[in-house]
Image (cartoon, rainbow over all chains, first blue to last red; front, side):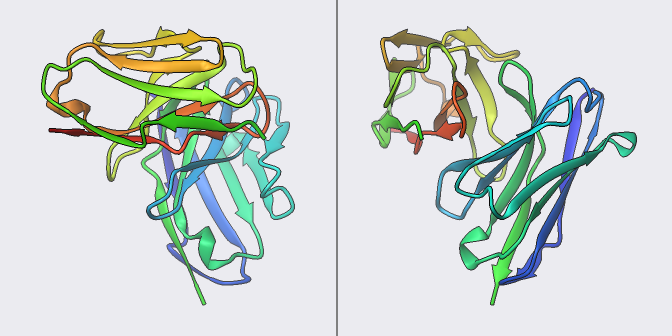
Length: 115
Length: 107
């Protein structure tokens, strides 16, 4: 069955770089896109970007200068990298599979950015 | 960016009530709209896609509709497990955008 799991550092310092990994099983990354979505405490959901099955990417323009999404298909992993972190990047970070909609989601990983 | 305006921002209803949540798009998105149910400590759960299609495993009391740029999620008979925040998402144009959410509580 389809499973997705995010792993991340938990705590990151301001101005540093965040790296979060989404490890998937039950499907191929070359056949499906994977989105990144985040939710800051007390806020709504924010779409960050997607890596498509062909490896191309699209990003939220508000984050594009700081954000990179990549993958390792041999390890079934998708990577989110975001630099120049600020405290308002504190959030739960989710990965989600793209089908006709965001059909499967990971449980999310909480990342706190502290000065 | 496309703005999605959800209304109401919060509401309370009784068990068995018919409940309708609305999402209005700032520009045309066709049927490229989906709905997600979000409960604390859990990932969002897909409910509706392409405006009117029920996602896998979603109870038939949920339905989606569209009238022009107005989209609705309707629960025909509210159950206690339906209390959650509901978000709409447009995926017609980048960046994809979510509405601010409607918090649904039991009266």
